Length: 221
Length: 113
Image (cartoon, rainbow over the protein chains, first blue to last red):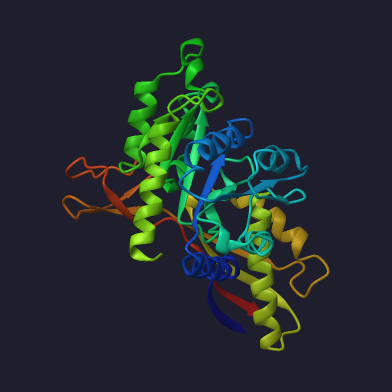
């Protein structure tokens, strides 16, 4: 017997993500999901973002990793609430993990929630977490050819951070080609060249993020 | 790894639907997957064989229809098919295009006893 199902495979995740989105809107929390390869500088970028915006916004961080608490401890050392999610092997975060982590935070005391996704350029792209924006980081040593190999993540990101920019002269990194390909894949996404650990180029990214936060506030989303 | 999570969605939803129909066995499941989801069919099939073990879907067939990418041009409204990477309007050369298909992740139907 043939039975029609006509159901989204990720319907459960998408429904829970919608619930997260409603909760964030209700509490006035702006949520950004940071995606990148392992070692691209996600945690350093978060620390630089905290330094740039902590006077304007109350910030909290959710750290997604397969194992360990090292990233959450690094963030907490700066006096910022940080929750660690250990996926125990899974290569991406899902909306139910976010909800459990969020439930341990006081959302009334938070304006900006930064989610550090598991280091991976493929899997996080299919999973809606209820965030306002997905943003990706590529670091210079990974090479300018990555948009050819992982087009999905470049297409879904609202902005692209090009990290470790201070090393660009040491690598065979063709910045013009990289910016061209990113633009072709995603014409509206700005590319922010940055050296997060040195604080270089952080302002342009922080101002973009602040503008997104204010825009979301204005429409009550 | 990614396919395991996707496949878990397929198997869970199918088993739920089969339970509603009081099915004793699932023979096959039909799914539609867009090429831009970066899902590898081989990995999906492997995950399916692992996740259906010891269930009423063990040994069933997963029929995968892969959907190619198509977009509509934001400048001249032309609709065109393209690869995973080259979403560029063949009529006017614009890159400002809206995807109309290629990111599907859908369970269509199944065959049960």
